Length: 146
Image 1 (tube, rainbow, N blue to C red):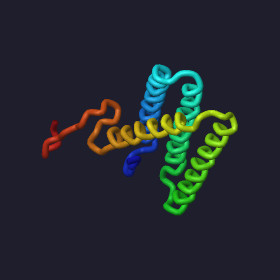
Image 2 (image 1 turned 30 degrees about the vertical axis):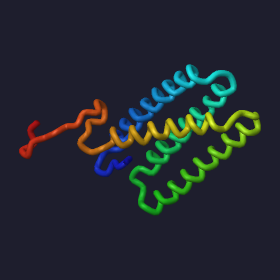
Image 3 (image 1 turned 90 degrees about the horizontal axis):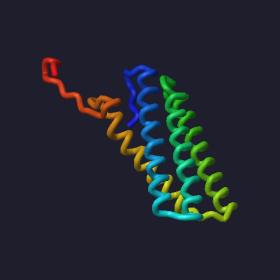
Image 4 (image 1 turned 90 degrees about the vertical axis):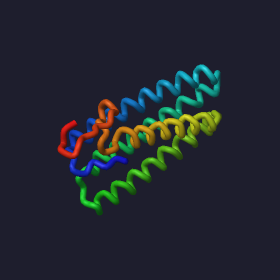
């Protein structure tokens, strides 16, 4: 999904910024929908799930940029470090929620919904042949003309 082979680092940064902004918009929509449906403690529990999902997305994008152009062995270490960091953040959030005696279902739902939205963004806006900033497919004839 995040395959930037043959692309410049600046292009990768632009694509990830665009996806990050879409994630923020999705988080605001999810928070507004949660405010309309949930009340009280349920809404308070939804907010950490959204924050957790956005932090997780930041870890993913940061690791991608950090490992951009790295040799395969170094990239493997970066991926292991990213996995450990993501797992640590998940454990910290879950135990914090349990320590505050808040429900766990709402943060998990928020986390999962934002990650489904992330997968949708990655599949639809990082495909080759799709103009990343408009989402339009660019079709060319055999001679290269539109």
